[in-house]
Amino acid sequence: MDYRIRQALPHHRPSWASVADPIFITLCHKFRGTHHFDNPRCWSIVLEATTRLEKQGCWTPLVALAMPDHLHAIMRVRQGMEIGHLLWRFKRDISFSVATEWQKDGFDHRLRRYSEYLEKRRYVLMNPVRGGLCKSPTDWPFHKVWDDKLSG
Image 1: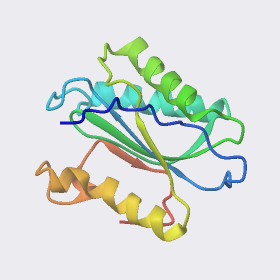
Image 2: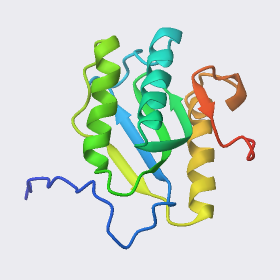
Image 3: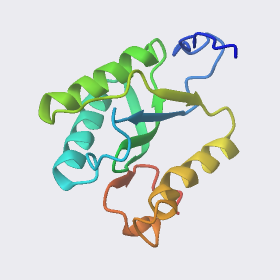
């Protein structure tokens, strides 16, 4: 069987891509199935790190959600900000306050159309429902939507 070495994917935004395009982000704990992010203390730290990077002008948060072993977010990332470095800063900032063993790197995907944004937004908010953690997205305490003009 042919086992190819997996190549690292670039985290940079092409120069022609719009800065208005939101970025869908997933960051995972090293050990899947771990209950790490789904508690009030950790969630508070995640929100503080998100706000700190927003105040520094790195990104504009639209949606964030903590699952037990991973985080989802949709952000608008400032032009010129290298996404891989930004994710590293975010993970490092969280780890200063709560010891976290992160899975290497993270996943990011540019959402090119508004319909893609709405689809990912729904996916993120429905994640705890699909995981059997609550009956409705609004019941999950570890989420925040800055994009309040769009509900549900």
